[in-house]
Image (cartoon, rainbow, N blue to C red):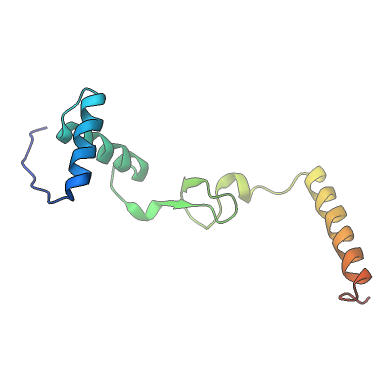
Length: 104
């Protein structure tokens, strides 16, 4: 792929940090920035459709697809998870009853 020139106006401290970081990684500033941008592009998929990448509302895992939950969080709970949830709910109800915030 051919290269094209891009002019950026950045804060002087940012430029100095970029130069040092690029040198430490054995790259030019342009190569460093291009590498970072390519990594970011990979996060969105090759077609550049930003709408596909999102974060799960439950676990904050990055995923693509539909809905607000990642596939792992969409799976039904295991019997053990259901039992732990039931026990936690019972403990919470008991504490709320004890302080007078829950009536049966």
